[in-house]
Image 1 (spheres, rainbow, N blue to C red):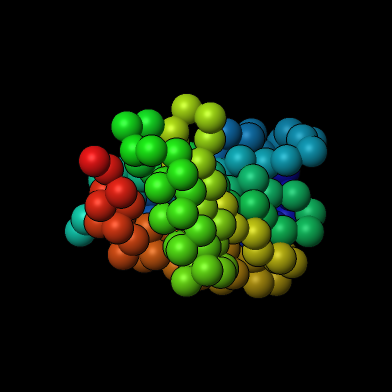
Image 2 (tube, rainbow, N blue to C red):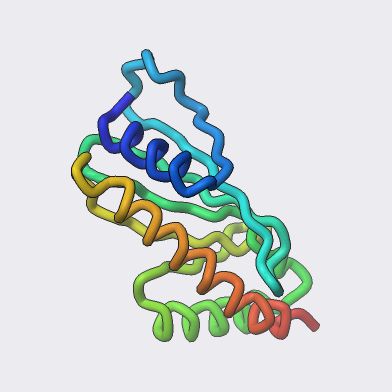
Length: 139
């Protein structure tokens, strides 16, 4: 397991944040995965996956909302507006109409926990803020 992963998990544990690691500590994987879930004021229970390597982490929240009933052009236009307003995150629409959210953060072990926690908090806050806008795209 990467030092970045261990540092992030130590910070999560110290902050009392429940998480789950899909990677055993003694494993030598190419990518470690740590999961954190949260329910916001508006956002239903959502999980952020940290995909961690030795240089940083890719954060992803998959299936944030299902926009299959929304015309694809309208959904893409709404997501493009969010991408312009929240440039730190990227909102995408998959072929099944699911909205995914992605972010990348550079981390070194000395600050991995701090940077990872900040990135996670920011992503959850933005998802909670924009969820009503995403719901507004539904017919």
